[in-house]
Image (cartoon, rainbow, N blue to C red; front, side, top):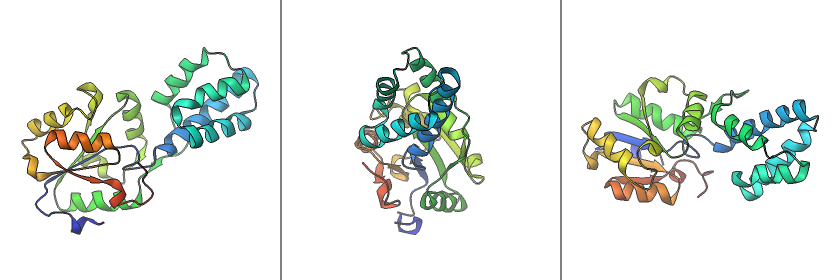
Length: 207
């Protein structure tokens, strides 16, 4: 799907961040690299081996299982769980996060058409802001308005979207939300706005 196939009456577009505008794994795998390097320096462990364990665990079981798998495999002190969480929230990445090309094209066309761009994202606000700051936006950042849902009530609760609608004097019929999970879809439904799955634009998006 491309921009010209979207209802031209839509005046504002709301995006989730992770796995909608960019692949979340691009952030997490760089954090894993930094954490493995940190442990190599402090505990004299093999960073390459740790990174392999973290990456494989992420791919097979998801992010929530990563630290436990690392601790079990390398007998890491539980105290490093806090370091891991801090790094997740404020890591300075070696490489910029790159938008999906299809989403970059879509957002650029929205801006050229003088319509509004929003991000409404779930998750830890500090961590989500850290990601946003390290995305290569190609100049789009000046047009983006971001809301961190957890500062209101996490999606699928509609509080952040309701606030957005009120603050920008929008009509619900004029808004399209683009997400990638059932949570996003339910949030759009609760807010009374139309919804599209990001998979319509990027075929690599997974539920």
